Image (tube, rainbow, N blue to C red):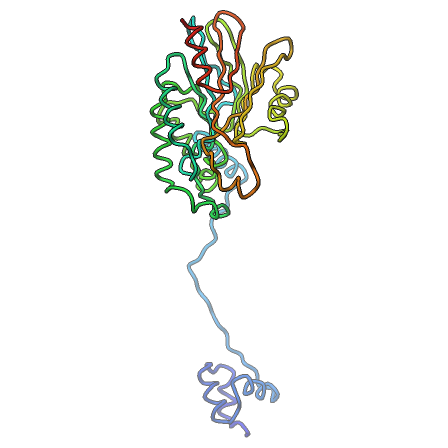
Length: 334
């Protein structure tokens, strides 16, 4: 159908609604067909659209301003995240002390021996001359989405954290140092908040985070040692291989090294650099571990190893069982 002259004149600036009306009136299938017909006749659309807005680009910041801002934020973040990697702790005493290494409590996981946990915590709290390094993974804390297949057998996380906080508070006068582990640190990686670090500040406990060199002064003697949650060079067949390799390669100054995480404990006292040294691997309270059963890891057992340190002479004595160490401590202190 031939389009009348008045439509041709109005077409270049007509609205979309008007185009649809004309397309129907003249029997076109749709607006697109109508517009193609008009284009073939040399009639083009000339609609001009004017847009206004109050949007404006942000003012540009300089390289120096960016650097100053990010440097300031780095200092602020460090307040919440950074801890010393070397510290000195002094025990002014003329009697030997016992330092216990306790880690991987896994509080909240099914299969934890809470009776043994209670006995050990009470012994540390009440026994004179006994102090403790509380290691990582003190709660189960299955909080990552990728770990949720293991969450079915844990108590609610607030209850786990409650027990952890109250245990640290119970032992705070006996805690030598406190560190985090991979289970504890999952919360930090998800939220940015180091809950254990904040707890340590609140309770005035020395926090070494992932680990540190600790220069331990007992009376007139100094026993520097290295303690971390995770060690390298691990061997299933030789559990203290990690400790001794770390000492040889990285910590030749250490009198003893402490690594946790694997739940299978071992202790070895040996001669290195013409000095008595010791290697400690801690155990766990998670005596039944569904994850371990599933993946074929065996041998986890309750074990808080300990070392007796003398203040008047260079002498250390390593024990795998903290209760054996306490018996020996009583004898040498009295």
